[in-house]
Image 1 (cartoon, rainbow, N blue to C red):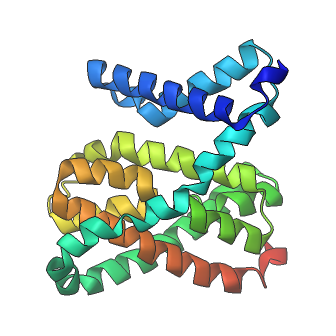
Image 2: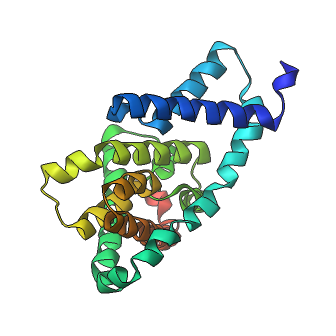
Length: 231
């Protein structure tokens, strides 16, 4: 067991699980076989079945988390390619980010109150619709539980990746800018991966919306922490 107590173990099992998930998704094209969802389930099952301490996996798994920030920065590539389009539609993106941030925070608080969720969990769920690096900082600001926040963000991203196309069709959202903004604001990087598959414009607008929604949520969080005792 001690031979697994090194960073290489966490890295290898993560990459293998993701590749298996990716293979299953390409073979079946079934939305629930999303590589991230399948890979996460495989890692959890493997650690549980062989009773491997989480600390062993985290030594390598945490290294993957380290690359989340530069990966988010790389979203600037599709933005640059669609710079003219972004200048043209900056107002809808800003309004979409504002409305999205307000809706996400308010709906989370309302649902948590209806369901009787503990306040610490409620706070941890507030940044669920923004990308992980920003969401972690928001959770820290509000005094949330970081692992719960990360879990909520991952589930939100996976849900957006799986259901984005269906929701756009159901509500007849046809404009590529509207699609991109909606997907990026509601499901951050996970949804943006799907938006890029839909089209280059959708991907660029979704990537921009991640940044806008993250900044707006950070601003709201700075004010919300002064009233957090009232929740």
